[in-house]
Length: 262
Image (cartoon, rainbow, N blue to C red; front, side, top):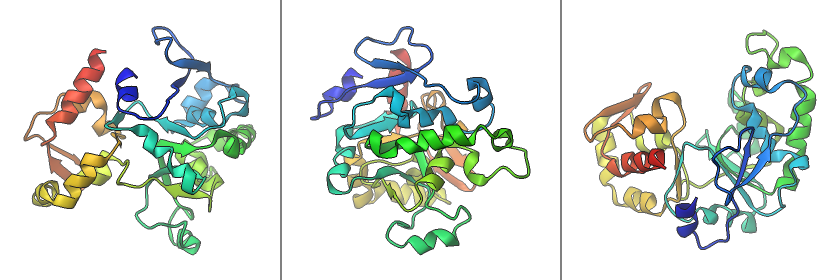
């Protein structure tokens, strides 16, 4: 937390929504999870990270200022407060893009996708809490229907299978993508179909500039857990499906090593 604040020119307040605040520094404000209409265990067993929708709960009384949510597997590289500045130009709910096409500019494009909406990755979000309180309220109402939390039920809608799917469908037409110049996913920004292409990408000047100025990078997915990244050595090949790269980012390994030692 201290290192994050040191990198920022903004006055940051740190909040952790948790069911166990043991050993969390007092410099971080802790809030208990709000009440869901089903037991927490049921919610966790239903797939996705649905308790994350707590960030939109009115009862938590999070101050209505530009708010940034980040997953614990997100690396903070610079002034993360710059993400909140996006709200000054266009107040909206921003998330990492799962689509490369900017659907908010051409809403009809959403109907051409399997999801029928602009699909975000919720590892990093930026928003005004009070503008999106209905996300939590509507979700809590929806999950009163038991089959909507059953991943194997034939009638379970696509958007009920994870938190990011629910946000994407609920806020259809209202979402914006976080710019890749500021944030991004390691999978999306570093992996390519060919190792030689990854090497060329790593040496391209405009790519280097973007990476230098990026303030946050998330490592989502089971294959890219921070504890695994911490153990990688230069030359290791990591992949996800057909995408791959040869590890040449020792600074990332060092970051997660130091993070784990804290």
